[in-house]
Image (cartoon, rainbow, N blue to C red):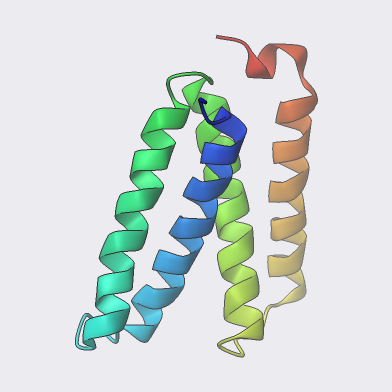
Length: 112
């Protein structure tokens, strides 16, 4: 049974966020297991992203992947790594989310 491109895109986003978060923990690739998670996470992410591109337009895919990825990595930084966000950063994240939503509401945004 073929996997939905939207599920594959979700997998790509989640594994990219895990890999990016692990990149910080890897301490410049000086810690083995976080470094392994980085390599495997990015590998899975790009593979799932490539499979998604068989069915959906690259612009829509990349906007969603990068927009949600930025947002989720920022939230991980805030909650896990205790990094503080300015009001401008929060507004920017809100605009990214709004842009992804607007793209997906457009009837021409999801055609080939």
